[in-house]
Length: 235
Ligand code: CTP
Ligand code: CA
Image 1 (spheres, rainbow, N blue to C red):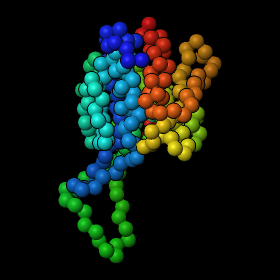
Image 2 (image 1 turned 90 degrees about the vertical axis):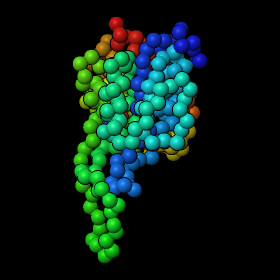
Image 3 (image 1 turned 90 degrees about the horizontal axis):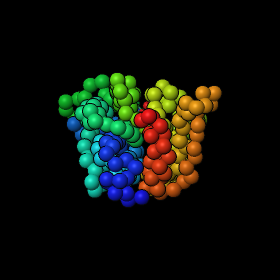
Image 4 (image 1 turned 60 degrees about the vertical axis):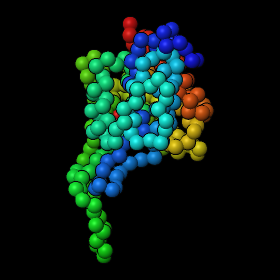
């Protein structure tokens, strides 16, 4: 812990992390978003920094202070987050996609505040799919070592494995967000980590369970678990 930047396990490595929610504007005063607090991504930034990494933290709107020694880039929407990620990838060794990216944005953002129409049958918003940021990273020519997250309310293992393969991730951190007191907005979290072990081609995925603990402690444990996999990936 608190390794010297020159001698830590991630010394000389550039780690890019996305964190927090994205906000998708409806009109000048309203947006679509989710309950992500950014705490997990910010904790990961601290944990990577403490291992000596140079850290770029690309964050959606959150109420958190910038960790010392970390370069923070603030964004609002998913499209802006993708642009910031693309701009940071030139020298990126490890990418960690912790942001809760909105899956959809408004097909058209209203220029003026939408007016309520009393007695109308309701309001229908037309949405279009946002770009998949982490998939854009892994589908580049020489992608960095990439860690994804999956927040699920059911069938954790199946969904995590599906995302690991479909998004070409090196490691996925799956959270059961239905567990009381854990996950979104909470200070504590638990996780199950999955990766494909090339030495065990018959095994669908190797898993490792991290019991509930403070997000800072969980972040340190995730980075510790990632280190030997990252070293194996570099060879
Ligand atoms: N992710 C991303 N860009 C998106 C959506 C997701 O980079 N537009 C990343 C998240 O940061 C996370 C991983 O993909 O690391 C999994 O996110 P998740 O929302 O669980 O995956 P989706 O493919 O959007 O699937 P779902 O239908 O379960 O929302
Ligand atoms: Ca999603």
